[in-house]
Image (tube, rainbow, N blue to C red):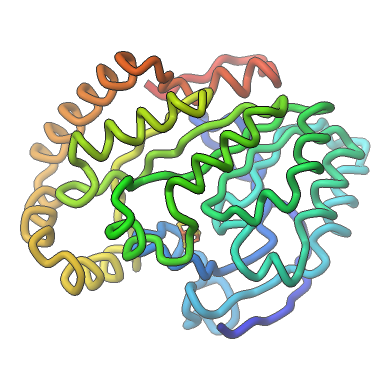
Amino acid sequence: MKIQEIECAAAMNHISSRFLPYSWDLNPYRGCSHGCRYCFALYSHSYMGDGNGDFYHDLYVKTNIAERLERALAKRSWTGEPINLGGITDCYQPAEARFQLMPDILRLLIKYRNPCILSTKSDLILRDFDLIAQLASVAAVNIAATITCADERIREKLEPGGVPSARRFEILQAFSETRACTGVHLMPIIPYLTDSRANLSAICQGAHLIRADYLLPGLLNLRGKTRAVFFDFLRRDFPQCEPPLRKLLDSKKAKNRYRATLFGWLRTEAASQGVSLDHLSPFLRLHPAEEQLSLF
Ligand code: SF4
């Protein structure tokens, strides 16, 4: 792992999507050593250094991020909008144990009573449990864990740096005792690898057992560099999945049919297990927005 400390000009990036309950993204790190084979954020390294860095092994650490965040939150023009922590890279990846950027960020959010959304694959988040619980008592907080795979043999290959899926459920269970809302991000679902009814049903059941506020499913989306990296992985570790997946992705009609069948089944399965697929309402109940958003 090559680590470079940098100073950022601004703590947050503005993003706009009518499908998201936030417009601001904050990423203390660029690059992520969790090493997920499907990582959609590989493109983001093109903007760093000479643009040829390795997303998984060249890490940039924004050491002044808390100071920049305070500048932004203290502005009279700041209206206290929700901030998505780690929309590009995981805030609780291993380097956070050493750099400890998150506690200062959380203290600022508490100070300014600013809502946030945070998703992780690491139990390092539990180090900051008390701060997050305190924040959830003064502002809307959504804690999510990405959980894609009940079979640990596949999960270890797919997300080598994340903690086991069972541990991610435990993380959410811990936060369900706070005032934060909690969600299972079942994404990406990978056709022919993690899309078995048994796997999806086990994750729905896990969400039900820990009383997650919602489950958010999403289908594999291979963009830019991610496509080549993912297919290299598949060819090496799960070669039987490569031909049918390529065939599926190459046909828009087949992909649409696959998506409709999968999501139809998931809706029925989630309903039968008492799990909500509405990922917006739990957070909007805590942090009412002027306009109700809907994905479907
Ligand atoms: S945790 Fe997220 S950012 Fe990190 S490698 Fe995995 S998908 Fe990419």
